[in-house]
Image 1 (tube, rainbow, N blue to C red):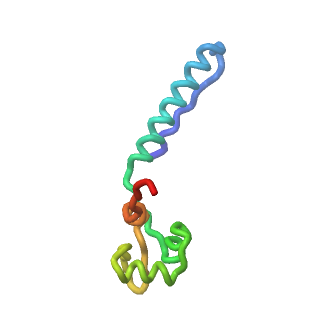
Image 2 (cartoon, rainbow, N blue to C red; image 1 turned 180 degrees about the vertical axis):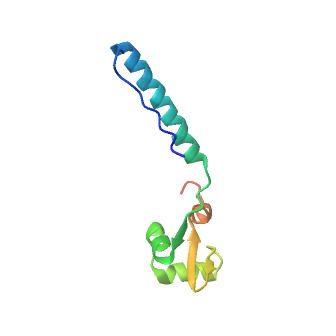
Image 3 (cartoon, one colour; image 1 turned 135 degrees about the vertical axis):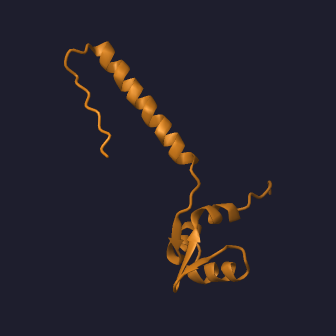
Length: 95
């Protein structure tokens, strides 16, 4: 299921080549914007979640225990969803 297209550069002047590169760049930009719009459902380990939040594992445990963050368990492994961590961050008004 390889969807590769081959572009020949022969018999193209600089203007045609530039036009083709611009088309490719526009296509790539569209693909990148679609990727950014997809919800983030990455699973993070306890260590990764703590590193993102710049907190200790003890603090992460405490926040989970007090329902500040939601943890998810598979077998004996605990994970956090990146989107839920970002959602838990609350913007504060001017101090």
